[in-house]
Image (cartoon, rainbow, N blue to C red; front, side, top):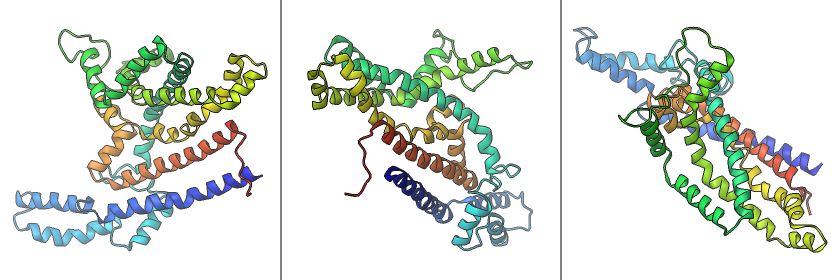
Length: 347
């Protein structure tokens, strides 16, 4: 019962946390210079100075005449509290608002078109990361200070030292035919090939995997070292704990003590980091998506931020923050499932 009460409190805490995040970011977009109104006024002034807006129309006249109309168009003429309420409730966290750069599409329509791409890369990299790093961390812990541990540590630290953008550029240079004389194995970018006819499932799957190979490799390399070392150190701490020696002293084999007792407790740090990964599945990676020309959520958020398309940017922020908060709640649930020693009763 105490655990249920704790989870209810954590769930209720999500609401003010979400409001706090969105209020701060929403307010910043309204007061920072260079917003959508200023950008459009600058464009109109440039057109007037170039003579494209008419010979009798001055830049000052355009600014005074259109500024209030633009503010009404974007809803900036209302008090900030009313603007936030309309964004949060009336427009469903801004999902129903039209994009500033693509007026014919709402923020949700743009986001919805990018979610499948980010999910493909996010889920694939997430599964591969845990499928590789957790067994590797266990193997390194069981072979601590042996040649396998030293050799794998060298590979892990090299992968950790290379920045994601550098690794992406190197892979593209060596395996995408950008340099004459090197391998031309993988496509330069994109997520699929142009087919003359609708491909079958197997053809589509192989083509998608072919396009995803290098970007996913970059995704996995980014969190490879940290997760591997976290698993190794966590298992080593549990193996050296007093309760493991007690289990062995009572007649259990070392293998049984490790796999039935130490392994479960060693998963606690891994589980606590599992929930926040849900937010990353949708957020994507700006650098990798830009280099490999992947139309995902990361690239959409970057384009929206650079173009001051605050309608899309705030909708993305709200969606990512929601999944991040839900992921933190999932981490708490996993933590309680793995570690039954947690007690929330008041002493």
